[in-house]
Image 1 (cartoon, rainbow, N blue to C red):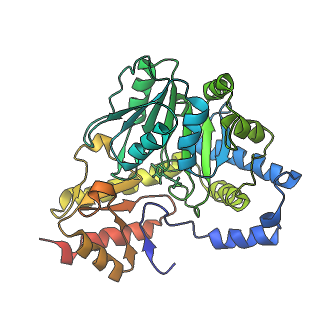
Image 2: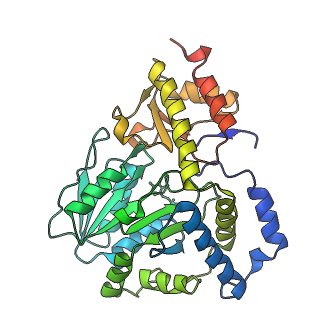
Image 3: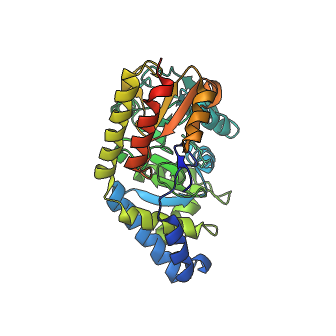
Length: 352
Ligand SMILES: *Cc1c(COP(=O)(O)O)cnc(C)c1O
């Protein structure tokens, strides 16, 4: 790689991706028929690897989609009867609200970037609660304890959680919600082009109750195919293969999330000491560990100096585009790259 990429999505991919792509080609995986035994065993193996490495419960279904964005529609089409309530404090959660709103009645529930998610009872008009656990646009997170409180106050409702930029980097307590999803190009360190969807038994029951089969991506079709280790449409076989290879090599989420935490604390140590930087959210309890967003008085200047030093910082997003920059703290980033970025940010030209 010519540059050190700290962009939070698409982001740095694992170093071995070119080797794995070549191996996939040599093994004929790239041309495999998705109804063949060969594909089915790859899919079965991949789901098994994900359960082992990410600690996904055995009674939760694992399926593949095209993207996180697609999942916004799937949840509205196939899991929502009355309406969905959307908790958000940034651009991705807001986009989810807008996508869902074209299909079902939605109730927006915005909250501030320094606040915890309001884990209130959400009333009779909504049966699905939508939470962006890791809001990539402003680098805030909803802690598992908050999801637990939301669950406790809303028994019987489906809770759907966007973990696009945290799955693979944090410990997730899957039992606290019914739908968990991500795309592969962020925390999972793969080239873009696939989504991951994890469903509780309650979510599957709800899909059965609603019975939506009108679309190519209706959830029942996805689940029924997945149980046969297939997909409704021709999937991104290369991405399934790469997910299996990279996760097989991983030391597991307990170890990986420990590394992510350790690096986060290193960054936090620098930014708390250094006058030139301020975390976008002042509330440490809601700060994401996999993506960091920092205010700085001269973001364009900082980014161009970083680039001269071979480092690509992430732009700010949405309303914070010009006043913040973001750093991906994803597992595929090397420790040595983190060290270099910390040395660069903490060094001479930025002081004062
Ligand atoms: C990137 C991102 C998405 C969209 O992902 P796609 O793969 O482009 O569909 C959704 N939610 C969050 C939190 C994201 O970071």
